[in-house]
Image (cartoon, rainbow, N blue to C red; front, side, top):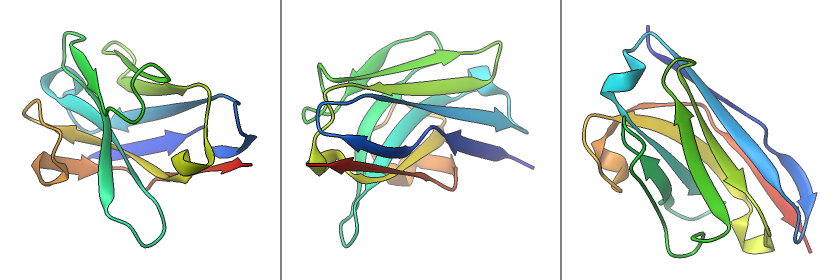
Length: 121
């Protein structure tokens, strides 16, 4: 079956950096757009970044210039590199796979279990 497994979350101070990884199995990775979303407690799940099979990417305004999405089709893996983290970046971060280049969570058919990122002030 399809599996997406995130790792790399944790506790970091304001201004720090983290790199999240998402390793997939059970799907043809190169056929999918990969996205990262985040959900803070009591809030909706929000778009963070997306990347097409050939590396075209886009990022939410709130993270542009601080976060960067990447992928390696040979390794079936996508990453989210996060710098200059702020307390408002604290959330559970999810990776997801979609068949279209979308920023809407409803377009993503496959999801990981999430990894917690906490940024202390």
